[in-house]
Amino acid sequence: MRIFFLDKFIIKVGLPVGFFSFSRGIFGEVVVVVEVVLVEVVVVLVVVVVVVVVVVVVEVVVVVVVVVVVVVVVVVVVVVVEVVEVVEVEVVEVIVVVVAVTVAAAAEAAAVVVVVVVGGVVVVVVVVVVVVVVVVVVVVVVVVAVVVVVVEVVVVVVVVVVVVVVVVVVVAVVAVVVAVVVVEVVVVVVVVVVVVVVVVVVVVVVVVVVVVEEVVIEVVEVVLAVVVVVLVAVS
Image (cartoon, rainbow, N blue to C red):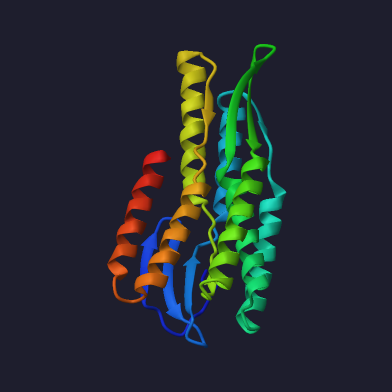
């Protein structure tokens, strides 16, 4: 699902979490877009299947804290994006889009899976780290404001890191099941927070585009390739 439709694409790099595109806006400004495929449904289905298998087959009580805010934020982002696509992109609109999607990404990426024993029964609890969400939002807002106001570059960033979350959740669940059933131990699995990495990458990409524009696009490709390797490694 493509959220933004630009007239001219300078580069398009395929990534597990989406792909980056660079283009010129109506007034000649550089536009950086991170386009993603919304796979929220896949995430929900995977979680449901895992919960059913764990509860029915392994006979383990599973407590899952579902973040409804993520779904709401995604809907809001889509609405805001449609408005931004029609209306002239302004600083406030860009910040709204960035903040909304960053909250969604942080809410999904910053999760902790904790396995505890209550009365002899293993309980798996998924907790969302709200503090990370707030910190990331503040950082992104400041970066976007500085880039848009000082550098005079329109930056539209849409980042939803769901692929890494799915991989981490599946690996964590398998590890928990194996540890509980085979090894019979209590396991604590902490999901790596990848939002900080994403923010750093966005800043690097923006700087590269602003400085070299269309000349050294290969640098951006290398950066994105490194990011993919890092995300796969930490997952």
